[in-house]
Image (cartoon, rainbow, N blue to C red; front, side):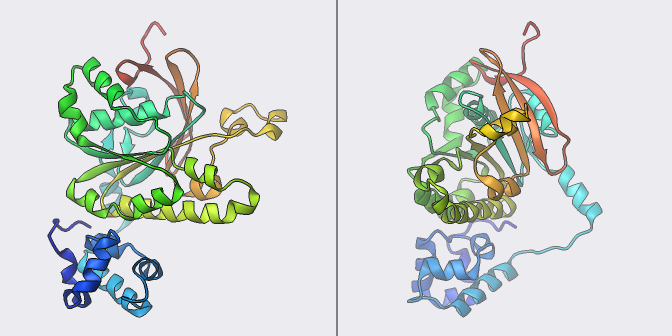
Length: 325
């Protein structure tokens, strides 16, 4: 998918071309492109716009026409394999970590970095954004815990001989205040993705606001529904705009596992439950094993084998472990 950004691409849909009020209402809710409507569910469209301006039948027609305006292909598995070989991959700064991920963080897939505090999740995200910016690639970085630091980014860039004033403009930052705010950001980011040609979307950390606002088992069902809604939107963006989506996750203690397990991802599993697990293409578990040294274990992947590698966090961000270490 991917028409060039136009002032009014939605006018290609007949009912919108003749209904300026509905057109403006859709834009007000974040629907700026044909892709944004094509990947939407009609009942969600109705919920967001309101019954005063749109009916369910009209929402179905709009979504159907939007999909009809975009190119839809049915291809063979052999052709799909060739397309997969052409996927862009973005470096983490460490060759070992890149190899763990099959050559780097892939576009059109969701990669999750999980692990305890100070294990390197945010540092890895910022390094990816910085090195992508070096090649002119734009990133949007949503921060739920205040870990993002432009000052740290500037120091990392200088340590690598890069000019911060050329790096930072390629990284767009959004502070997340809560779960509903996160959902709002996700549902209204179509125009930014298109206009700024965003290729990497980072959400650090994803489940944190939901954990804070939905404590206890009695709130588990609504929490997981909201998480699922956010992830489905991210998956749609990932496919429609060829994004590399990166999320980070906190971990929790699992005391019952101590009697029979020693693996860190079992002793301290990532939060979010099965809803999060099923949406992730690659889950990488980070451990701190020294002042600068970290271990990264690929604990789950759609097509890569489990493996553990070492990397370091230095003034340059994420990089390979020095020989003497």
